Image 1: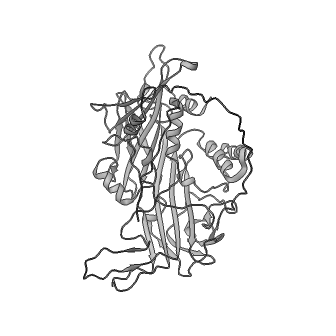
Image 2: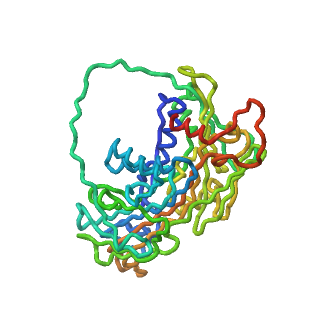
Image 3: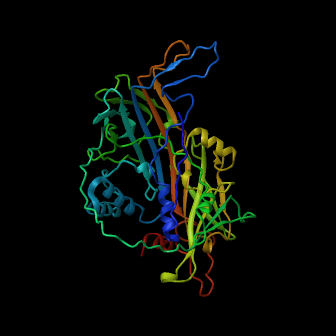
Length: 460
């Protein structure tokens, strides 16, 4: 099966702060491309062979299931509040739902309900464990509901209710055909990219784009973003999914996926029973320690079992001191890669093949890595940046019956399952609160507070 690299463009008619939010949003887009394993995918293909070889016939599976698994950690204040608001709005409550979700989040997320599909791709403001599931069968393309019988260690009863979303009726929106004079405001500010672990900035850095003078060709050359989104769980007609409005239970912190999962529904083969092992289980949260060292920020973390690699990125900025219409500034991005990369495409699931490739290229840190450092002088006051980190698990494929070794026997699988696993973490560069040695601030020197960055990002 083929993969395609996501193409993302950023319009010139955008302020520096606008670019900050667009870039952050790019990292939370849902997976859109197709899976990319050569020996496991069960799409209709034929093995390339010589004239004397027998070409094995491979047919598409009758049923397909996708399971996305994510652990999210954060030490940012108000994370549950923001996550609760997003959950309330996404679950169909609109503005009132967002307010209700925000209230639940303010109480520490005490409710065991309010889970919404897509949390495996959230920005990771709140800590928790998330699972998105969907199933499809070619024998019933309009399947509306199914059940997934689960192991007891998942702590969610005997089964999950999978429901396909009901298509919304189109709403007529009147079109105003009154001619409007187009306006154009020249963009302001700069974007700078740094890369590489270490206490000092590497020679030849940063790579900077002046958005006021850059051409479209300059944009295309500047925004180098590795990352290939692969096909995963989706909630759409014909694809019953969990969680949903009927079953919106949260995944308990003690949950485990190890054991047998049985998908049942009209058109789903009775044989659809897949057993998940430890590598497909929910990963532990990332335990990241940050400490200041001569202006640099040292990052240390514990190794995570079954992690395939790690990647860290920090996004921040600094103002030019002006206000109002004259205000401008600089958006700053740093990544742990040894090669220049904007980083946002890598904070999500990646295929085993791509992870291994980018580890060899030193874009992704290997599984043995336990430390990195953000160089001194990149971000104002040694902080003022939003940090995001990911530990990649391995994607896994299961199919039944197994592929026959005899090429003369056609492979006609009843079902196939794909599982993707990751653990993510978000914080403020330098950590929340005072870090490192307790030194008295210089006269008239403003103390760097993580809350100042939160206010600049989300408003006062």
